[in-house]
Image 1 (cartoon, helix red, strand yellow):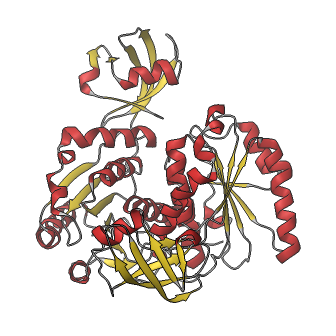
Image 2 (cartoon, chains in turn brown, yellow):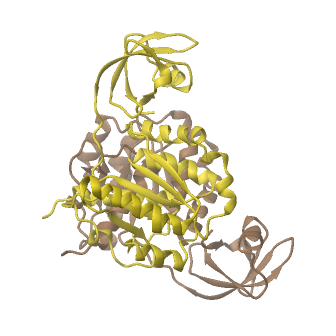
Image 3 (cartoon, rainbow over the protein chains, first blue to last red):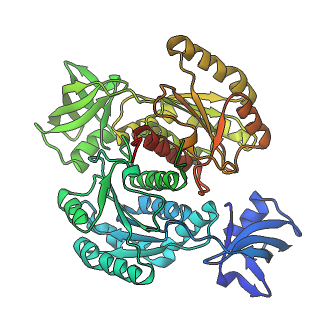
Length: 257
Length: 257
C-alpha cells in the first residue's frame, strides 16, 4: 500500500478522516506509525499528499490531511478494451489497469469468452471497486478507472465505441490511436505510436486463446491496427502490462541516441 | 495451457508419454480432444511440436510425439536478479520469468526482504518447479529457467555475479548489460540498450519498497545502470514484465521510422 486511498465515507469533517478497516490495520501494523507521524494519502478521484496521524486506537485511526496536490492527468489517456476474462484473472486485471493509470476499462463479449463470466458477482461495482482501489494504492494514483461491461461484441465496436470517439472529437478533435496486439503481426509498436501526437489510445486485448478471425477483421474495419508485443505468449494481465510499458517507453524515449 | 510440457518421468518408451495428472485432465476436459487428434507439446528442456493422442481413459492419456523442433534460444539471454519476494508473489514471479524466457533467476537477500522468506518451503526445487512449468506452458517454451538463491546481498553482487560474468567472458567475450530499474532515474531504457550488441542482460528488480541507497550504490559500483520504467509504481512481477517488454520492443524496433 504505497498510498492510502481515502473516500467520502471516511470523512468526519474538518479535513479529518477516520479509518476502521484494513487501512487502519496497515497504518498500525505494517507502517508501525504513531500519533504525529505522517502517511502518504490520496483522496479518491482527488488530490494526493500527506496526512498526519491524530489518533490510533484498536478501533481505528484518525488522520488529518496536510497539503494536497492534484494528481496529473495521464498523457496519453488510455482506454483499455479487454475480452471479459474469468473472475480470478479479472481481479488482477482490475488492479493492473488502475495501477497503470488506465482511464476506462471496457470488458467485452468475444467468441472465446465463456457466457457464464457475465453472470459473475464480480461485475457489480461494489465488488470490483476494491480491486481498482488496491491498484490505485499500489500505483500511487487516485483517479478510479471507469468500468463498462458490453455484452455484445459487434454493437460495442460498431456503435458504442464510434459514438465515444465522436463525442471525444467534439471536445478535443484528435482521434484515438487504435491498437490491437496480435501474435501474428510482425509490426512493432514503434511503427504505430508517435509520441508527438495528442491522440488518446484505445488498446484492445483479447481473451485467453485470442480473438477469432472474424473479430480481428471487424476491429480492423473500425480502425484498429495490429502490432506485436514481441515473441512472448502472454496472459491477459501480462499483455496489458507489456503493452502499457512499451507505450510508456515510446512516450518518453529520446528521439536521437 | 498453450503447450503441454512433457518430462522424463512421463516417458513410457517408443516416443510415447503417459499423463495421469492435471495435464490429462486438461486434454480431456478443456481441449476436449479425442484419440487421433493432435495437441501441442514440448519436452522439458528439449524440442517442441505436436503429439497424437493414442489413448484416453479415465486413468490418463497416452501421447505419441510427432515431429519436434528445437525451440530457439532467446536473444539476448536474460538473467533476472530479484530481491526475494513473499511466497505468494514468488509464485507469480516464477511463472512470469518462465513465460518470458528468462534464462536464470537469482533470488537475493536485500534490506527490505523479510528474513522469514528464506525459510519458505517454496524455495525447494520440487515446490517451485511447478510454477516454472506453468509459465513455460503459457509461454510456449520448454527451457526451464535456473533458479539460484543467495542469502547474502554483498557476496552475491561482489563475488558470485562477477565470477559468472568472468566465466561467460571466457566462453563468448561480450560482457552483460547490467540494468537497474529505479523510479528515481529519468533515463529511459532506450539510452542503455542497443539491439546491435550481442550482450546478455542482467536485470535487477528490487523488493516492495525498493532497494535501500546502500544497495543501489553497491550495484552501481559493480556496473549496474539505473533507468526508469516510466511513471508507474509497479509490483515486482509487473516491473519484470514491463522491463522485459521494453527490452523486447528495443530489440525489434525499426531503426528509422
